[in-house]
Length: 113
Length: 113
Image (cartoon, rainbow over all chains, first blue to last red; front, side, top):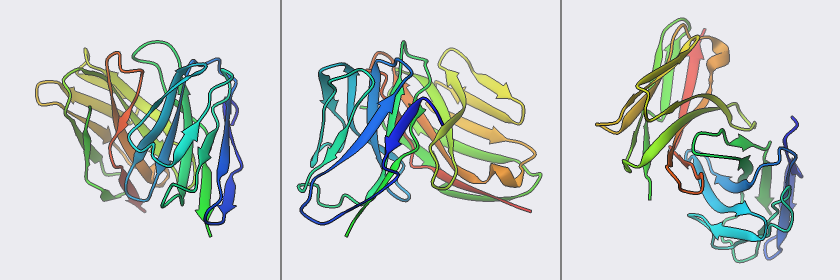
């Protein structure tokens, strides 16, 4: 399971708390992505970053924040503003042109108590 | 932006039979179409992909076909085995779009022994 790592695997949060999910890659990829997965809904894009110190909102960015201070790291913070944060969160990365594979991390399952 | 629809949402087949999953996309500028397999609680993994300049691609028991005119592409699995049971996602990428993938909602394939 090298390449992209996410931690922790399981995370429990109380309502009103912010929590940060870690994503690290050693593939030297430029672009990194965060997806949220809910049952029966596929993968929805939260944020993405093409280069260090730059990132863009995806389709469901409200209540989330990210940073990209290093090429290998793209942490996601789930804030208290996110109304329904319980989900499976997947980080991904890719490099190069149009046809390169997007690799996924193992995911973090977040549960709000 | 791109919109990808995937059908069916669930599919059960007998071991040894074939399975077909279909996807349609909306943006004619899409030029890359990967398929991912996700086992329960695991990360999605690429199983096959196709570029827009190719009509069909095959890898052992798995094949993908693309009809650019109709904007649809399909995954074909022959001689299904119990280990093929998983959720399958199609995706599409618009050329030059920060390498973002838009995913279908997934198909739960169950291969019955």
